[in-house]
Image 1 (cartoon, rainbow, N blue to C red):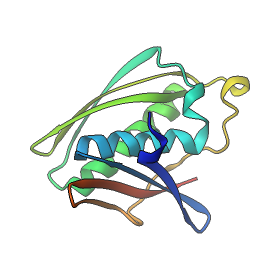
Image 2: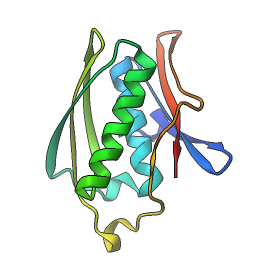
Image 3: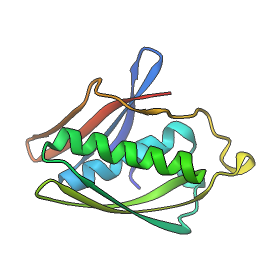
Amino acid sequence: MNSSNWEHFSHQADVGIRGTGASMDQAFEMAAYALTAVVTDPKNVTPETILHIHCNESDRELLFLDWINAIIYEMDTRKMIFSDFKVQTHNGELYADIKGERINSKKHDPAVDIKGATLTELKVTNENSQWTAQCVVDV
């Protein structure tokens, strides 16, 4: 993953995640990578287990929020962390394959526990053929 396509931005006590790309799908993938980076260094996560995610929402910003919350749900319920994301969106539907492994406190040294994505700073935009997807996550 190219770290120039994702970043964190400060927002009071919480953390903003932002992904950019040539397509909305790529921006969603990079934002998911930024989500992982809130918890641990994504380079330390082995993509050994694959999960499938499906979200359905006609508004692209709410679709993005559902996407990030779906990853957080999988992280929490399966005690996993993810480092590989393949997203396809079409007509308000998102299909994704995410790959990761069970969290290992020694290997991953998790920094925080993410509670959920919020509507704060939520936006999905396309400016000059550059897509951006962002929101603030509650930690």
